Image (cartoon, rainbow, N blue to C red):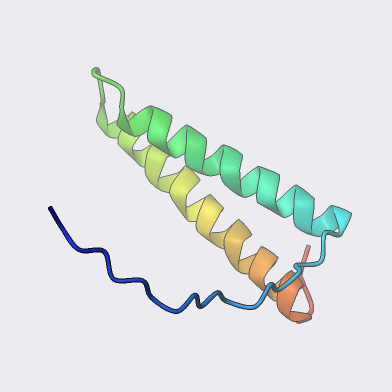
Length: 79
């Protein structure tokens, strides 16, 4: 039998993110781009074209995440 050692509870302070319509839209678009990239990568009949599409969608998702980060940090977001 193992001995369980209780540890002091440490939780990160709750950091409420602003939920503006712009931020929500960027989040949705980033999720969709990542989903499309994964869908293309998981195809059994992958071709160079599907790999290019997956790369383009992953790059798009990274760009959207950067814009969402700028939105949260209060930096000017470029449309």
